[in-house]
Length: 170
Image (cartoon, rainbow, N blue to C red):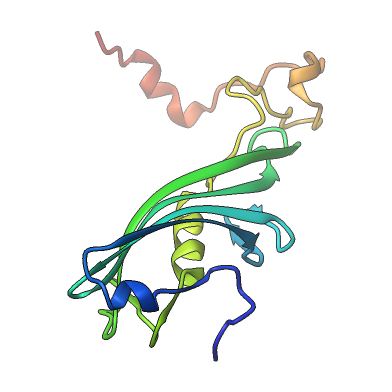
């Protein structure tokens, strides 16, 4: 199946005829929904790709940077968090790709979609925070501790860990 309407399918016919040449691209478009541990790039979000393509005897080397917005929940207080992920890449597209190492080079085009999806999934934050010093929520009453103390009594120490109180590292 050809993805002719995808903004991330690029013709490389001219490069394949002239090894050693390089072309630069700026691509933008939706990649579809991606999700990793609750952090999501939604289907309607535009992904930006700054791309350089260079023909070599083995195929085409693609390098550049991918930028995408993401959203998720703060791992401590559960408020919505938004951010942007930037990831650099350098990958080889060849006629007979090695699984897990290189990507497929079509007849005269490359489809960057699998590369973009993989790079973004690996770069999305696994445990986003709204702020570095987020206090989270009270485990007893569920109050947001970033807005002030909740009034619950402090949790007692777990007796199973009492032996570690005598252990001092210096």
